[in-house]
Image 1: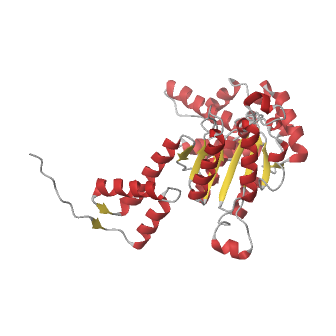
Image 2 (image 1 turned 90 degrees about the vertical axis):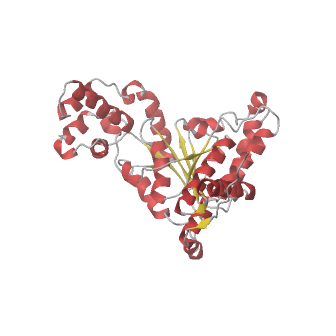
Image 3 (image 1 turned 120 degrees about the vertical axis):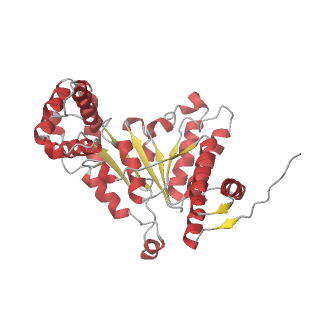
Length: 351
């Protein structure tokens, strides 16, 4: 014999909590919202402070099932990124510019940025840090999932991406390796993929030009030569930034950040000496140096010291050496077409 229990739903949520729940439902359809709320109520038999978190988790699961957008957790802010003072200043000026006061002031919501540059210099970290700094949801566009083998389905999928992103607004839409999304959009694309890439590009350009919802597009790019020219003209994105290898001052800052993340006091190390020895190293390579030095110190049953860092640097061949020609080509292209992300210049140091 089955006995059913009756539960009385309790409301332990103040107006601010209700606003948080409503905010976390942003971007879902009415049916999806009802499902998310129902799941939260069944789990706790109450509207309580935890409901806002439950709803957010339900929304993440729904986005994941869409297979085109991933909800990305962010904890980093721009303080976690070494250097790039020009980019940081640009972003600081646009913070909160999607709010009603900014609109009344005559501002349009910022459209986005393309961050191109040397691999390992923090482009993807910047995209994540923008959302963390601005305290906005971050959704990542899955470039592979949007393509469908059936004619017309890819175009429908990209429109769905736009709709969901606008429903989540204000938010940051992260497109990693932008050049791969429109790799087949050149003049001969019709013979390659029946013109799907070209139509996808046209839809994206139209949306970037005409959208009103505050969706900030943070796009990263490694190979700028693969980008269609119409994508990088003014009016699509607010700015195109070039991230070069870090300067001496920026390397010091990055070493300080990486040591602090691992509960080490940078003042206990000769950071000037280490940063000078790491000339030509990217931010990712500096992080790897610190990790390698930690392994060495641990295996030797010693505390991490400057010497461990210097030895790790000696054992690493940076990309600035192995791919020097490619980096120089990128620098030449960016010199007249992009804004330097940093006011410092690492070119002379890394040659």
